[in-house]
Amino acid sequence: MATKKQQRRRYERARAHGRGADQHIEIEGDTGSERRKGKSSAPRGSARAVQPPSMLRAARRSSLLAVLFLGLLLFTPLGNKQTAAQKGFFAVWMFTMFCLVTLMTDRWAYRRYLKQQGKS
Image (cartoon, rainbow, N blue to C red; front, side):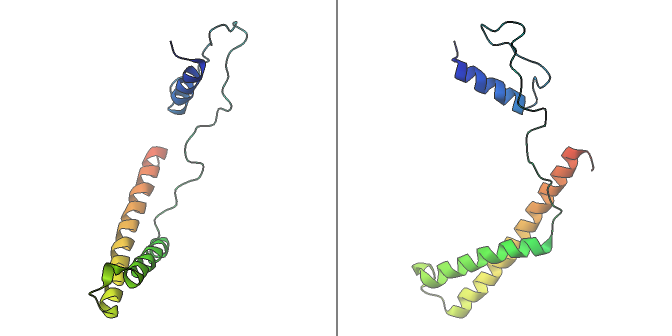
């Protein structure tokens, strides 16, 4: 038999996944008038809307990663056999790749959000 804590967690998981959201489950030993009620009827999930994809936002994220990558090449033994120009070129290449992947990921997330909202 599951403990009260396990039962409570199972119930909360079920509510979070949309199962039994309108139902009240009686806990053993409770009378009919004492039923467990949820904290709120608001759906769980992300609290804010997903922003549409933006090249500026993707470039900002990618620049942070590219600078971090360039720092790793310059100040660690990873880039011992490369010149500074080669390291710089590689950082620009990584910026481009990071930017494209970030933009595609944002686009995928935004389309998925629209599809879930029924706005597609």
